[in-house]
Length: 300
Image (tube, rainbow, N blue to C red; front, side):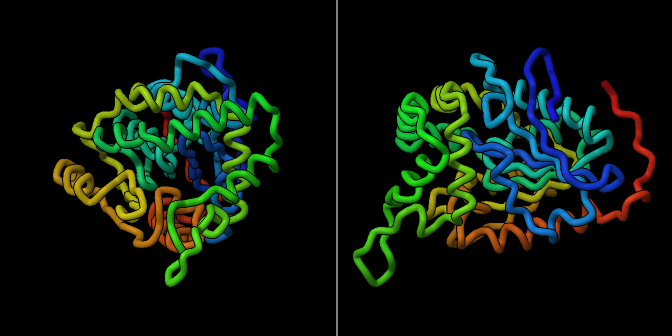
Protein backbone atom coordinates (compact mmCIF):
# COMPACT_ATOMS: atom_id res chain seq x y z
CA UNK A 1 0.00 0.00 0.00
CA UNK A 2 0.98 3.66 -0.30
CA UNK A 3 0.54 6.58 2.06
CA UNK A 4 0.55 10.00 0.42
CA UNK A 5 2.03 12.89 2.39
CA UNK A 6 2.29 16.29 0.75
CA UNK A 7 2.32 14.72 -2.70
CA UNK A 8 4.99 12.10 -1.96
CA UNK A 9 3.84 8.46 -2.00
CA UNK A 10 5.44 6.35 0.74
CA UNK A 11 5.41 2.60 0.15
CA UNK A 12 4.34 0.53 3.16
CA UNK A 13 4.27 -3.26 3.43
CA UNK A 14 1.85 -4.47 6.11
CA UNK A 15 1.67 -8.04 7.35
CA UNK A 16 -0.26 -9.61 10.21
CA UNK A 17 -3.63 -9.09 11.82
CA UNK A 18 -4.98 -5.59 12.23
CA UNK A 19 -5.77 -6.54 15.83
CA UNK A 20 -2.13 -7.34 16.66
CA UNK A 21 0.39 -4.98 18.25
CA UNK A 22 2.01 -2.80 15.54
CA UNK A 23 5.78 -2.84 15.07
CA UNK A 24 7.16 -0.39 12.49
CA UNK A 25 10.51 -1.17 10.81
CA UNK A 26 12.70 1.60 9.38
CA UNK A 27 15.77 0.94 7.22
CA UNK A 28 19.10 2.70 6.77
CA UNK A 29 20.49 4.89 3.97
CA UNK A 30 20.23 3.23 0.50
CA UNK A 31 18.26 0.27 1.92
CA UNK A 32 14.51 -0.45 1.80
CA UNK A 33 11.83 -2.38 3.63
CA UNK A 34 12.89 -5.54 1.78
CA UNK A 35 15.85 -5.65 4.16
CA UNK A 36 13.44 -6.85 6.87
CA UNK A 37 11.85 -9.69 4.85
CA UNK A 38 14.01 -12.23 6.69
CA UNK A 39 12.41 -11.57 10.09
CA UNK A 40 11.54 -14.88 11.81
CA UNK A 41 8.35 -15.84 13.70
CA UNK A 42 10.08 -15.06 16.99
CA UNK A 43 9.72 -11.42 15.92
CA UNK A 44 6.68 -11.39 13.63
CA UNK A 45 4.20 -13.96 14.99
CA UNK A 46 0.98 -12.44 16.38
CA UNK A 47 2.19 -8.91 15.65
CA UNK A 48 1.35 -6.43 12.91
CA UNK A 49 4.60 -5.82 11.00
CA UNK A 50 4.76 -2.53 9.11
CA UNK A 51 7.80 -2.02 6.84
CA UNK A 52 8.32 1.46 5.44
CA UNK A 53 10.36 2.51 2.41
CA UNK A 54 11.61 5.99 3.30
CA UNK A 55 11.24 8.68 0.63
CA UNK A 56 13.85 8.33 -2.12
CA UNK A 57 14.30 4.65 -1.28
CA UNK A 58 12.88 1.38 -2.59
CA UNK A 59 9.34 1.69 -3.91
CA UNK A 60 8.62 5.13 -2.45
CA UNK A 61 8.64 8.30 -4.53
CA UNK A 62 11.81 10.25 -5.13
CA UNK A 63 11.75 13.84 -3.92
CA UNK A 64 15.15 15.44 -4.48
CA UNK A 65 15.87 18.34 -2.17
CA UNK A 66 13.80 16.87 0.68
CA UNK A 67 16.11 14.19 2.05
CA UNK A 68 16.34 15.56 5.57
CA UNK A 69 15.32 14.13 8.92
CA UNK A 70 12.13 16.20 9.42
CA UNK A 71 10.72 15.02 6.07
CA UNK A 72 11.57 11.37 6.71
CA UNK A 73 10.05 11.60 10.19
CA UNK A 74 6.86 13.32 9.03
CA UNK A 75 6.37 10.63 6.40
CA UNK A 76 6.60 7.95 9.08
CA UNK A 77 4.25 9.94 11.31
CA UNK A 78 1.67 9.77 8.52
CA UNK A 79 2.13 5.99 8.45
CA UNK A 80 1.72 5.77 12.22
CA UNK A 81 -1.53 7.72 12.10
CA UNK A 82 -3.02 6.29 8.91
CA UNK A 83 -1.85 2.67 9.08
CA UNK A 84 -0.85 1.74 12.65
CA UNK A 85 -3.60 3.76 14.31
CA UNK A 86 -2.29 3.07 17.80
CA UNK A 87 1.01 3.66 19.62
CA UNK A 88 3.67 1.46 18.00
CA UNK A 89 7.09 0.05 18.69
CA UNK A 90 9.64 1.51 16.27
CA UNK A 91 12.61 -0.55 15.09
CA UNK A 92 15.19 1.37 13.09
CA UNK A 93 18.63 0.67 11.69
CA UNK A 94 21.12 3.51 11.12
CA UNK A 95 19.13 6.35 9.47
CA UNK A 96 15.96 4.51 10.49
CA UNK A 97 17.15 4.58 14.09
CA UNK A 98 17.65 8.35 13.90
CA UNK A 99 14.15 8.75 12.46
CA UNK A 100 12.71 6.58 15.25
CA UNK A 101 14.53 8.65 17.90
CA UNK A 102 13.19 11.91 16.44
CA UNK A 103 9.62 10.63 16.38
CA UNK A 104 9.81 9.21 19.92
CA UNK A 105 11.16 12.56 21.10
CA UNK A 106 8.61 14.80 19.37
CA UNK A 107 5.53 12.56 19.42
CA UNK A 108 5.61 10.38 22.54
CA UNK A 109 1.89 9.66 22.19
CA UNK A 110 2.62 7.59 19.05
CA UNK A 111 5.56 5.53 20.32
CA UNK A 112 5.40 2.74 22.87
CA UNK A 113 9.11 1.93 22.66
CA UNK A 114 12.05 2.23 20.27
CA UNK A 115 14.75 -0.29 19.29
CA UNK A 116 17.65 1.42 17.49
CA UNK A 117 20.34 -0.59 15.69
CA UNK A 118 23.69 1.27 15.56
CA UNK A 119 22.13 4.72 15.00
CA UNK A 120 24.34 7.73 14.12
CA UNK A 121 22.85 9.90 16.87
CA UNK A 122 25.99 11.81 17.87
CA UNK A 123 27.22 14.54 15.47
CA UNK A 124 30.73 13.06 15.30
CA UNK A 125 29.26 9.83 13.92
CA UNK A 126 27.33 11.72 11.26
CA UNK A 127 30.51 13.44 10.11
CA UNK A 128 32.40 10.15 10.03
CA UNK A 129 29.72 8.69 7.79
CA UNK A 130 30.62 11.19 5.09
CA UNK A 131 33.89 9.42 4.38
CA UNK A 132 35.32 7.27 1.63
CA UNK A 133 32.76 4.49 1.93
CA UNK A 134 29.81 6.73 1.13
CA UNK A 135 31.66 8.47 -1.68
CA UNK A 136 32.45 5.08 -3.22
CA UNK A 137 28.88 3.88 -2.73
CA UNK A 138 27.52 7.01 -4.37
CA UNK A 139 29.80 6.64 -7.39
CA UNK A 140 29.09 2.92 -7.81
CA UNK A 141 25.34 3.31 -7.35
CA UNK A 142 25.14 6.08 -9.94
CA UNK A 143 27.17 4.03 -12.43
CA UNK A 144 25.12 0.87 -11.88
CA UNK A 145 21.82 2.68 -12.26
CA UNK A 146 22.97 4.45 -15.43
CA UNK A 147 24.14 1.12 -16.86
CA UNK A 148 20.77 -0.47 -16.09
CA UNK A 149 22.23 -3.31 -14.04
CA UNK A 150 19.74 -5.75 -12.56
CA UNK A 151 19.40 -6.50 -8.87
CA UNK A 152 21.15 -9.84 -9.44
CA UNK A 153 24.05 -8.16 -11.23
CA UNK A 154 24.48 -5.58 -8.47
CA UNK A 155 24.29 -8.35 -5.86
CA UNK A 156 27.11 -10.19 -7.63
CA UNK A 157 29.33 -7.12 -7.46
CA UNK A 158 28.48 -6.54 -3.80
CA UNK A 159 29.16 -10.17 -2.87
CA UNK A 160 32.61 -10.10 -4.47
CA UNK A 161 33.63 -6.78 -2.89
CA UNK A 162 36.65 -7.04 -0.55
CA UNK A 163 36.02 -6.12 3.09
CA UNK A 164 39.58 -5.23 4.06
CA UNK A 165 39.62 -8.11 6.56
CA UNK A 166 41.58 -11.34 6.29
CA UNK A 167 40.59 -14.82 7.36
CA UNK A 168 42.28 -15.50 10.72
CA UNK A 169 45.41 -17.60 10.32
CA UNK A 170 45.55 -17.06 6.55
CA UNK A 171 46.32 -14.34 4.04
CA UNK A 172 42.98 -14.71 2.26
CA UNK A 173 40.99 -11.52 2.12
CA UNK A 174 37.35 -11.84 3.06
CA UNK A 175 34.63 -10.65 0.69
CA UNK A 176 31.19 -9.34 1.58
CA UNK A 177 29.80 -12.80 0.81
CA UNK A 178 31.94 -14.21 3.61
CA UNK A 179 30.52 -11.82 6.20
CA UNK A 180 27.00 -10.97 5.05
CA UNK A 181 24.03 -13.26 4.60
CA UNK A 182 22.86 -13.95 1.05
CA UNK A 183 19.42 -12.42 1.61
CA UNK A 184 21.04 -9.28 3.02
CA UNK A 185 23.23 -8.87 -0.07
CA UNK A 186 20.21 -9.25 -2.35
CA UNK A 187 18.22 -6.76 -0.27
CA UNK A 188 21.09 -4.29 -0.36
CA UNK A 189 21.32 -4.69 -4.14
CA UNK A 190 17.58 -3.96 -4.45
CA UNK A 191 18.09 -0.84 -2.36
CA UNK A 192 20.99 0.41 -4.49
CA UNK A 193 19.06 -0.33 -7.68
CA UNK A 194 16.19 1.92 -6.58
CA UNK A 195 17.64 4.59 -4.27
CA UNK A 196 17.82 8.20 -5.42
CA UNK A 197 21.56 8.98 -5.36
CA UNK A 198 20.71 12.44 -4.04
CA UNK A 199 19.98 10.74 -0.70
CA UNK A 200 23.70 9.98 -0.54
CA UNK A 201 24.49 13.60 -1.39
CA UNK A 202 22.49 14.67 1.68
CA UNK A 203 24.40 12.16 3.81
CA UNK A 204 27.72 13.39 2.44
CA UNK A 205 27.07 17.10 2.97
CA UNK A 206 25.69 16.58 6.47
CA UNK A 207 22.19 17.91 5.83
CA UNK A 208 20.50 14.51 6.20
CA UNK A 209 20.64 14.45 10.02
CA UNK A 210 21.44 18.09 10.76
CA UNK A 211 18.12 18.55 12.61
CA UNK A 212 18.63 15.63 15.00
CA UNK A 213 18.41 16.62 18.67
CA UNK A 214 19.85 14.38 21.38
CA UNK A 215 19.29 16.80 24.27
CA UNK A 216 15.49 16.92 24.59
CA UNK A 217 13.92 14.09 26.62
CA UNK A 218 12.57 10.84 25.18
CA UNK A 219 9.80 9.31 27.28
CA UNK A 220 9.53 5.90 25.59
CA UNK A 221 11.83 3.01 26.56
CA UNK A 222 14.81 2.97 24.18
CA UNK A 223 17.26 0.13 23.57
CA UNK A 224 20.28 0.78 21.36
CA UNK A 225 21.96 -2.28 19.85
CA UNK A 226 25.45 -1.08 18.99
CA UNK A 227 28.05 -2.61 16.68
CA UNK A 228 31.66 -3.43 17.49
CA UNK A 229 33.72 -0.21 17.41
CA UNK A 230 36.60 -2.13 15.82
CA UNK A 231 34.30 -2.96 12.90
CA UNK A 232 32.96 0.50 12.10
CA UNK A 233 30.21 1.12 14.65
CA UNK A 234 28.27 4.37 14.15
CA UNK A 235 27.50 4.37 17.89
CA UNK A 236 30.80 4.10 19.72
CA UNK A 237 31.37 3.59 23.46
CA UNK A 238 32.10 7.31 23.76
CA UNK A 239 28.80 8.09 22.06
CA UNK A 240 27.06 5.73 24.48
CA UNK A 241 28.54 7.62 27.45
CA UNK A 242 27.44 10.97 26.05
CA UNK A 243 23.90 9.83 25.29
CA UNK A 244 23.25 7.90 28.50
CA UNK A 245 24.53 10.87 30.53
CA UNK A 246 21.66 12.86 29.01
CA UNK A 247 19.19 9.96 28.99
CA UNK A 248 19.96 7.54 31.86
CA UNK A 249 17.01 5.32 30.97
CA UNK A 250 18.42 4.46 27.53
CA UNK A 251 19.80 0.91 27.48
CA UNK A 252 22.82 0.10 25.29
CA UNK A 253 23.73 -3.45 24.29
CA UNK A 254 26.91 -3.91 22.26
CA UNK A 255 27.50 -6.82 19.87
CA UNK A 256 31.17 -7.87 19.69
CA UNK A 257 32.21 -9.07 16.24
CA UNK A 258 29.36 -7.32 14.40
CA UNK A 259 29.75 -4.34 12.08
CA UNK A 260 27.32 -1.52 11.37
CA UNK A 261 24.90 -3.79 9.49
CA UNK A 262 24.29 -5.98 12.53
CA UNK A 263 21.14 -7.68 11.26
CA UNK A 264 22.69 -8.28 7.82
CA UNK A 265 25.77 -10.16 9.05
CA UNK A 266 26.29 -13.82 9.80
CA UNK A 267 27.89 -12.90 13.14
CA UNK A 268 25.32 -10.31 14.16
CA UNK A 269 21.90 -11.57 13.10
CA UNK A 270 21.46 -14.24 15.82
CA UNK A 271 22.17 -11.68 18.55
CA UNK A 272 20.03 -9.05 16.81
CA UNK A 273 17.12 -11.49 16.61
CA UNK A 274 17.41 -12.62 20.23
CA UNK A 275 17.65 -9.11 21.67
CA UNK A 276 14.88 -7.73 19.44
CA UNK A 277 12.54 -10.64 20.24
CA UNK A 278 13.04 -10.08 23.96
CA UNK A 279 12.46 -6.34 23.58
CA UNK A 280 9.22 -6.90 21.67
CA UNK A 281 8.02 -9.46 24.21
CA UNK A 282 8.25 -6.68 26.80
CA UNK A 283 6.88 -3.80 24.74
CA UNK A 284 4.70 -5.33 21.99
CA UNK A 285 3.14 -8.40 23.61
CA UNK A 286 1.63 -10.92 21.23
CA UNK A 287 -2.14 -10.62 20.98
CA UNK A 288 -4.35 -13.17 19.24
CA UNK A 289 -6.71 -11.69 16.67
CA UNK A 290 -9.72 -9.94 18.14
CA UNK A 291 -8.09 -8.94 21.44
CA UNK A 292 -6.65 -5.56 20.50
CA UNK A 293 -7.63 -2.84 22.97
CA UNK A 294 -9.44 0.24 21.76
CA UNK A 295 -7.00 2.67 20.15
CA UNK A 296 -6.61 6.07 21.82
CA UNK A 297 -7.22 9.18 19.78
CA UNK A 298 -4.03 10.35 18.07
CA UNK A 299 -3.37 14.06 17.92
CA UNK A 300 -3.00 15.61 14.48
